[in-house]
Image 1 (cartoon, rainbow, N blue to C red):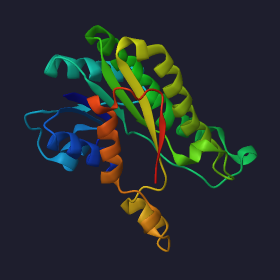
Image 2: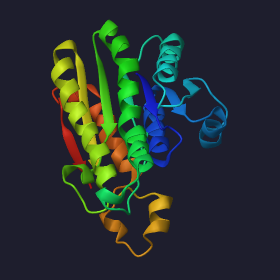
Image 3: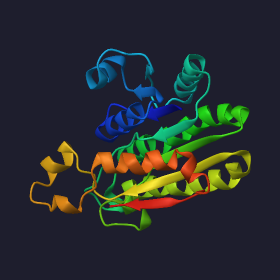
Length: 226
C-alpha cells in the first residue's frame, strides 16, 4: 500500500506513519519542511518520501501528490492528519484571523489534499480517504465556535465526497477523536483525567482499519474515537 499522510510530523501524524510503516506500507509524508520531517523520522529511508508542503496552497499540495505518484506509482490511501485547535473567545469576539486560521488548518488543508489526490485515485479505480475531524464537531460549544465550525466542515465534506465517490471504488470516512493524549494537551490540562483521552496509537489503529480492505463497506462514516 502507498499512503499519503498530511501533518505527518505531528504527534498523531507520527503515530499514523509508524503504524503504516510497521504494516509494510510506503509513505509519502507531508510536513511544513524537510527539516521538520527529518527531525521526526530521521533521514529519508526506502519506502518513505518526505515532501515539504504548505497545505493552504493548492498548487503546492498538487505537486506533493504528483511527487508521491511518481515515486511509488499510485496513492492507495490519503490520511488527513493536519489540523489545529484554538478556543477562548465567543463567536462575536473571535477575530477574522482566528476564523481564517481554523478554516485553513482544519478544512482547507483537507480540501486541497483531496483535490490533489482524488484524480489519481479515479485513474486507479480505487482508494481510501480518512480525515480527522473531532468529537467537538457534533455540536457547537461555547468559546470554540471557529474550531467547531472548521471540524464540522470536515464531516460534511466527507459525507459529500462519499456520496460522489463510493460508486468509483473510493471510500471516504473520518474519525472523531475526543481529547488526544499529546504532550501539548498534558501541559495544557495537567489535572485532567487522561484515562478518558484517546492515545495517538489507538486512533492510528482505527485509521489503519478504515484504509484497509476490511472497511470496504464503510462509506461516509464519522466514527467517534474516545
